[in-house]
Image 1 (cartoon, rainbow, N blue to C red):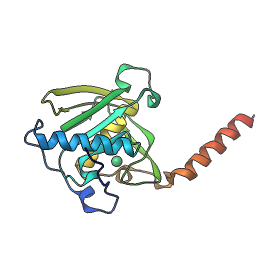
Image 2: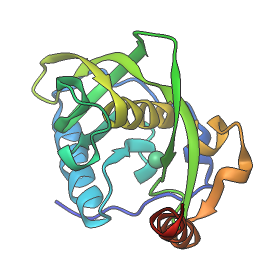
Image 3: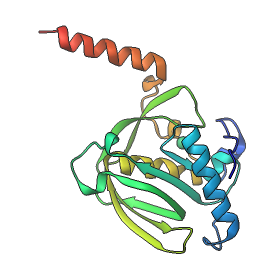
Length: 185
Ligand code: NI
């Protein structure tokens, strides 16, 4: 396994529609997924799409940890998952705005509207079809990663660019607001 270089916003590979994978079980896909997992964990991310490591193919990895769960419910968490040729769609039309970051846009966070409840499916590197529903953070990370396969970055989904911020400024602001809340009234 090896650490891969991560493409940053501005590189054309991030704006290209990625190619479908003919054989999800191929040795090249196994190697790509293993390297993506190592790269994501090294960068402390929760998701990564193949175009972010300069491989313009329809492969994503992600997980939705307990600590990030927004709703109570079985659909809000997911183990580390690799999906090939994934697809998703909304279960309900309602969207929620939430903060996102991206390993290809280091140092920034933005508030992005996403479907709250989706279905998704895709193939594992073992050739198994996974079909799941997802809500909350789990739904958000899957939509973010599949967007990468269509050349879409989270900033392109934002409706209010005043909510694009440097992560360290945001952390200070959130801390200040919490302090206001605790000392207010
Ligand atoms: Ni991303």
